[in-house]
Length: 239
Image (cartoon, rainbow, N blue to C red; front, side, top):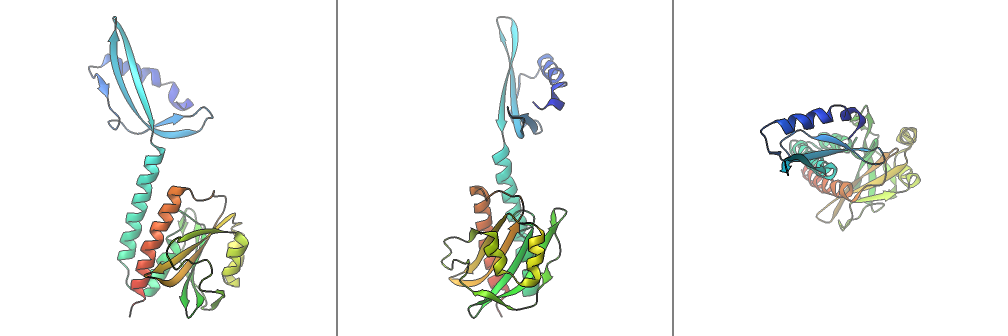
């Protein structure tokens, strides 16, 4: 147990042993905190039962780490909320604003979103994080990208999210926002392919500071979000 919980723990156990309740199952009580040998804390659920052995009362406690379960539930909530927001939009400008902000702060600290047109990317929106949230997406001066529409984008939908060197990602965004991206001191960068039904729609270039590489679970979340974003963008650009 964490240090802050140890003083009261014996009192809680004693109260349980005096009660008429034979056991408390996991999920009946609020989530508690556990402590690993290295000092790290983790969310946990506990089950406790009492028994009598030769006239001596004993308590049996089972502790379960729910870190991964909480992550899965958080990812599901994120996708539901994102889907609700995407479904409520029709206009292309509003959709682009949301697409630029949607990745912050879960995946990135700064994003640039572009649409593909006649083989080139055109810079349309940028957003940055502040105090754990995304600021309003800022419209960019429309201009063709330095590369072609295949740069960093998998039109076959096999891999929608790809980690790239920060220097490569910086070269894909407009000069006016390169300084802002560099100011975040990014340590990781990702390019998200926006494709639907075999068409390259655009890409989102993301920068983050001090974050590890995407875990398999986070990568799956980003891939799922990319699919939903691509459908919303495709719908919004329809005449």
